[in-house]
Each structure stands twice: as structure tokens, then as C-alpha cells.
Amino acid sequence: MQVKVTLAGGANTSGDVLKGKENPFSPKAYLMRYWDKTVSKNSPKPQFLLSKASPLNAVETATYSKLAEQKTLSSVLPSFCSSAKLFCFPDLSPSLEKHGADANFAVYENKNFTNYGTAGLGGVNSFKNYSEDGNVEVDSFRRYSRDSAGHNDKFSAYASHSNVVDDSFNTYGTGATGGAGDFKSYNREVNVPNLRFTSYSDAGNGRAQTFSSYTENTNSGGESFSSYGKNGNGLPNEFMSYAKESNVIQSNFTSYGEAGNAANDTFKSYGSDGNVPEQNFKSYGDGGNSGIESFTSYNPQSNVGANNFKSYAKSSNTEKVNFANYQEDFNSVSHRFSGYGENADGQKIGFKVYGPDRSFKDYAKTGVTFASYSKNGSGSTSGSSVNKNNNKWVEPGKFFRESMLKTGTVMPMPDIRDKMPQRSFLPRAIVSKLPFSSSNVNVLKEIFHASENSSMESIIKDALSECERQPSKGETKRCIGSAEDMIDFATSVLGNSVTLRTTQNVQGSKQNIMIGSVKGINGGKVTQSVSCHQSLFPYLLYYCHSVPKVRVYEADLLDPKTKAKINHGVAICHIDTSAWSQTHGAFLALGSGPGRIEVCHWIFENDLTWTIVDRMV
Image 1 (spheres, rainbow, N blue to C red):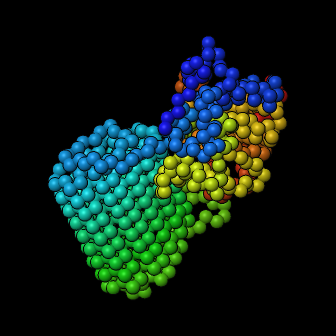
Image 2 (cartoon, rainbow, N blue to C red):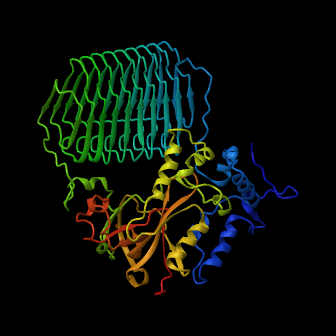
Image 3 (cartoon, one colour):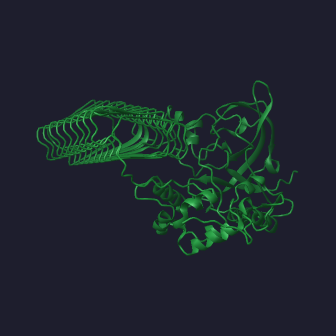
């Protein structure tokens, strides 16, 4: 079903520009009138906020509003997303088309690969530079290389430098004999990945899989390997430099290598230098026969994470498992081994140079050796000290002291560019008819075509969870999906004499800048502000919260070499940090602890802060 809306007489209202003027019935025109009605006359209309208004015209707004009320908006999702400038994944329907010949895919994106290489004999498929530098990539590999013999697949530099990636490999290489799958530099430097390997290499025979530099330098997201190599025979799998230097990564290995015969799995430099990594190995190698699993330099120097091994190698036969340099030199990582090696026969499990704070529950009492246990482990983050290596996880310049905001200071500017997909607010007439609560998550999933375990499901659930989180001490918060709602929240906290401030552009990002002239808002006095940060969601959603006891500054930002002005930045300094966590990035970067120092940061692209109108003007 497609929505095509025209005014009476057939005049299309697209763009809402009639004779060079804004259509008075458009969402943008309504927003302008709402500003005049709600905000003091001495506050100019902010072009920043007007630029986020919905591009829908009057008839489209009325049409989609009615569909939302009737709970049938999902039937026109593609046209709704396109017209309203929303973030939606394309629907990738299953394909019955078969592809047996060799294939070389370069410079592709958002494609459905179904039945590629099925029952193929020999040959190679190459995915080189696939989906590189892409935005909102959705790729599906279903029944890929299934029942093939001697078929090689190469994923080299796949989806690197991409934003919001969703890749699924279902029944990949199932029943394949020989051949190899090579994932090299896969999803490197990717933001918010959701990668799923389901029934990957199930019942495979002698097929080698190599994951080299997999999801290196990746930010947030999760990887799941479900029924990977289950019932496989002689499958060598190698994870080398997996999730290296990644931030907030979750990896789940469920039924990995279950009932496998003579499996050989190597995890080398897995999760090294990771920040808040969570790894779950559930039913890994259960019922396996004569397998060898090696964990070498697993999670070295990782910061604040959790590793869970549940029913690992349970009921297996002559399994050999080696943990060498497991979690050496780390900061506060918890590990739980539940049912590890339980009821196994002839197993040999060795822990060499293994870190502290480990929980072993129902693990095999025989055949397990611990050498150099708890070597070099700190195991605690209590107190005011900060691990000297932790500040590598905080980008230079992301947090700084108030004393840096002086003319002539040269300092690093973090990457303030907005990395989220471009979206617009929804008109209040539509967003007010959409549910926004965890209790209605299934309704939202239906509207935005979010299947189980999909990226969109995770995005919706994560946003709802953050928005429903209890406010911290002294905080007033609200998640906002329309410009009018943002105005209402800001004026409810600060009164109607307000103005909106944001950094002018992104010049100076990831390089040194020089501070030019500096102006403290309201004379540099301690004040209150309302800061709004984007949340990833199908429509433009802001997490807004009142920030008590702050000082807000505007500063010209100069090129240190030429002294030419390149930007006009807005910075906010939090005077009271007593309620912040000891492990907050600001203290990792600056040292000290909660309540001991003030912390400043720039307002990033497409984020903003509201203050009262500057009385010093």
C-alpha cells in the first residue's frame, strides 16, 4: 500500500512551499507558531530546531496520523519512513533464486544473499570492500555455501567504517565439506553492529573458518554465534584479534561446537584491550569428542567486563582446553564458570597465568590444573584510584577542566561529528498516537517491522530502557519525539525566557584547536540548563534532562597555526559531580573522583543545551 497525497484539484503539497512561502499548515509552520505562543518574545526562533521539523506536508500528516490512530501505520512503513525522513531498515524478503557460479561482490550494500554457493563444487566467492563506508547497512546471508564441497568464501574488509550494521548469516556452510571461510578485517571500526551467525557450519566436515581482526575498534553492539559448528567433524575455527580494542561489545556463543568431533578452536588475542566487554559461552563444546580449544591471551588488559562459561565442555569426551594468559593485567572483570567440564570423561583443562576474581561452580574436580593463578590482577576498582591505562578509552579532549577555557589555550578537540542516521522529529499529531513504553514494545516492533533478535528490536528496547531509567539525584528527565514536546520540557524547567545553544559546526574535530574569545553565559554564574542528547530510534528522539549547578560557555575556536576562526563552540561545565560513578569516563581521563573536581565537555553536533536568555546581552 502506498500513500499518495495531493491537495484538492491535484496540486501536490510536497515541500510545503507555495509561492516561496512556508505552507501555514505544515509541521514547520506549526512549530514556528508554537514557539511564538510558548516562548518569550525576546527569544529568537532557533534555526537549529526548525531544521529538525518534520518534512511531511499537511495532508501527509493528517493521513499518517489517522493510520497511527487506527494502528495500521505498519502497512505503509516504507512510504512513511521515506516521507517523514525516519530511520528504518529495508525489508529483506527471502529469495528462492539460486546462484551456483563463482561471484565477486565489490562495492555492494543492503543486499540479500540467499542460496549463494549452495551445493557448489570448488570455486570461490569474494566479498572485498563490501558495504565499506556505508550507513545503515543490512545484509542477509541465508543458506550460503550450504552442502558445498571445497568452496572458499572470503570476506575481506567487509563493512568497514560503516554505521548501524545488521548482518545475519543463517545456515551458512551447513553440511559443507572442505573449503574455507575467511573473515578478515570484518566490520572494522563499525558503530553499533548487530551480527548473527545462526547454524553456521552445522554438520560441516573439515571446513575451516578464520576470523582475523574481526570487529576491531568497534563501538557498542553485539555478536552472536548460535549452534555454530554443531555436529561438525574436524572443523578448525580460529578467532584471531577478535573484538580487539572494542568498546561495549557483547559476544554470545551458544551451543558452539556442540556434539562436534575432533574440533579445533583457537581464540588468540580475543577481546584484547576491550572496554566493558561481555562474553557468554553457553553449552560450548557440550558432548564434544576429542576436541581442542585454546584460549591464548584472552581478554588481556580489558576494562570492566564479564565472561560467562556455562556448561562448557559438559559431558564431553577427551576434550583438551587450554587457557594461557587468560585475562592478565585487567581491571575489574568478573568471570563465572558454571557446570564447566561437568560429567566429562578424560578431559584436560589447563589455566596458565589466569587472573583473579573467578567463580567456579560445578566444574570438574579432576583433570583441571591452575598455574600462576591470579597473576598481576588488580580485581578491584574500589577507592579513588584510577587505572593508569583506562584513559585510553576516553578520546582526548572529550572531558576537560574549566581552567582550559581561556583565550590562547591549545587543546585537543574530540570527534564531535554526529554518527547517527539523519532523522526528523515526528509531528506531535502522529507521535502522540504511538506507544512509547516497554509494556508496548511489541506494538512498536510491529510498526517498525522489527523481527526477533534484530538490530531494530535492540534499538527500540535500548531506547526504551534508557528513557525509563530512574533519574539520578537532582535530575529531571524526559525523552522527546517532537519539537513541541522539547519546548514544553525546557520551559517547564527554566521558564519561558529560554534560548537554545549548540556548537556551530564540526570544524576542529579530532585535531588540536586554540581557544579564542570566551563568554560565560549569564556572566559565568552557576546556573541550570536543560541538555538534550540524541538517542538512536526510528524517529528523531532526544533524551533531555535538567542539569543543576553548571556553568555554560561559548567560545570561538581557532586554528592553532593560522589563528583563523573555524568554529563557535558551546561548552558546559558540571560543577557538582558527587553523584557520578567512580568509573565515569571523565575520571578515567582526568583522574580524581566524584565530587572532587568539576568536569567540562563540548556540545556535540546535533546535541544542544537550553539556558535562560543571557541577561548580560
